[in-house]
Length: 307
Image (cartoon, rainbow, N blue to C red; front, side, top):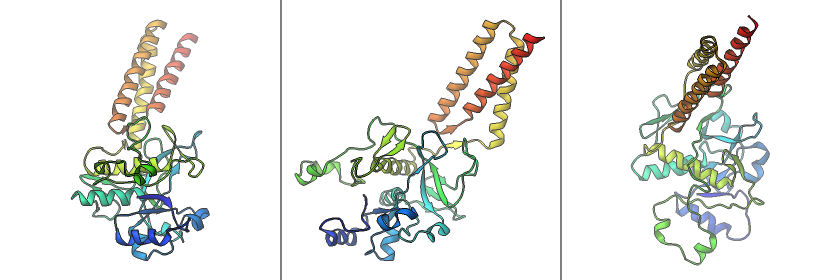
């Protein structure tokens, strides 16, 4: 995958690059659907319709703009047709990571298929459908995209082995490092390609794309599961139960030390429960339930002190 925008010529070798795309259908590049960058980040104008649909994927990274620290926490697989009609220079409906994962899984005999209702994709035994409008801490999802929460690989620095251009030109790499693998060609120069904000800090966009591609492949191979969340009414039920628990603890244990001890134990058990399920892909209402427990218990203790 060429994780570089090449809508316009850069230096020499343009025709050679185009010939590589013609002769290798597994070679994929990227474009951007952002209206302000259409001129710079569109599909290569020399591509025909088949190439624009099959060898180009959009590279859009969506940061959580309504948070104190905007962070990439979701990845988009595809756009709905009405969204594509608005994008004049990037007409592909599929993301860059989807194009790469689709090819890899297909060659492994695990080609993703469209669901029966045509609203999502089936990767192995996992169905990736539209996220509901309210999902976990999100309250306004939905729209023109098919997306999922991004499950970053558990790595400290980078999700894959890095090979420099000099290594390739000097032929110092072992063929086994690249044979039958997905290769992302990009750069990690922050001046040329500003990093994206992630839960692990600023990260080169090419590495973020690697995380996205890796997640889709692992889902297709049955290695990783999707993030899941409870329906909103069940979240509300949990919050209500912890509100009752907080009031009960405050009412039952009149001793301040005993009350604080039981409160700390309850919070630790809840925290470990949420963490354990989060590791397995579950998203529980940790903060709302915790606040409910603390507020209700505090109000009950205050009322007792006044009576």
